[in-house]
Length: 173
Image (cartoon, rainbow, N blue to C red; front, side, top):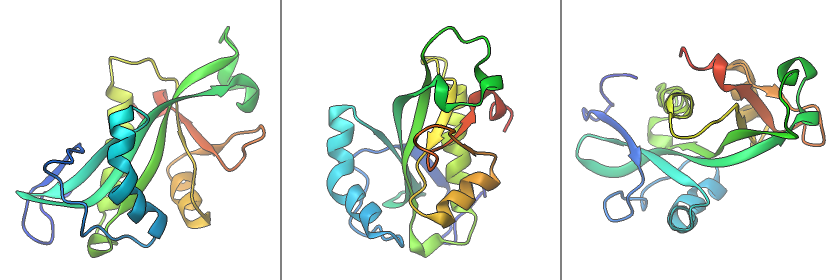
């Protein structure tokens, strides 16, 4: 991760705390993601449906990026046979990076990549939950290209728009 933001503060990526983090000024190019952060992220956190992580700089509580993590699973028939040869279950556990956005004020500065790598590392390093895959649902072709460039592959079943990567391939990031 880059050592400093354009405003001079040290980057911090941490769990979203609605009592501290300021969502009011967040604005990315996707209005659905803007609204999610402002109106739904805290509800998802409280209900344990998704755990939001946010990017801030220094002591400034303004959110400049975020992602969410949730537990999920993928049925074996949606995966390449070679990947699941010796798995004796009908589905494998997965982590879903469900929402992902960067504020327009820092777009193009590498923070999207840094935040995404943080999400991958957080999942791969977790010793508290067994996860075989990381999955994403790209919102559009540009997002799909972003994930594909980083090694994500399409599922082969009914959800080819959903992409995955085995956790073992991201352990050494």
